[in-house]
Image 1 (cartoon, helix red, strand yellow):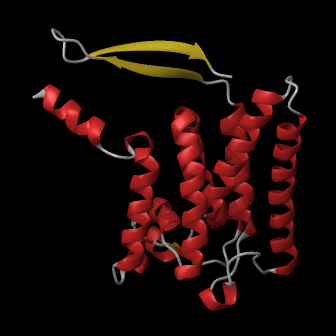
Image 2 (cartoon, rainbow, N blue to C red; image 1 turned 120 degrees about the horizontal axis):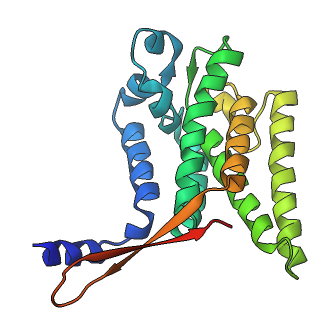
Length: 226
């Protein structure tokens, strides 16, 4: 039975990025099922009434197709890169984003009744990737990568400042989507990504070995995080 399950699992395409694909699928389902976005978006009154799951599910709701396209595209690109190579840090980043973005909006922007979107999490994953590139190449002879990571961080900071100053977005047509940009979500996500990249966690690699006598033997090899 275990051998059969192993063969099925190894035949599954995209199993190395199952979390990213699963969250993307969840986002797509919310977008196409009528009324589901309204039931899962962050809604201050509903959360106060006990629907606390909205603190998490609101990230996966979107206002229109344009909003969904930009948010989900970035999430899939960044999630695919990070989940393959830096899964523990990606999970940490997601956890920090979940714990900070919507609560920050709820506390410091009480004028907003609702919130939707992956852009805050996208910002966190982007800053995480840039941080890891800097750590990996800081003492190497690869100034292009170091400079590119700094430019990426500066670009996100400039985008956030632009949105704070103008009340408009660079990519999504916020007027057509009927939404008001909330740059605080990008700031909170960016801080979460930076913390996830710098946090001195101990990463664990799971190596699985199969043999004729033992269908599944798992060996855990720990190594210090970069």
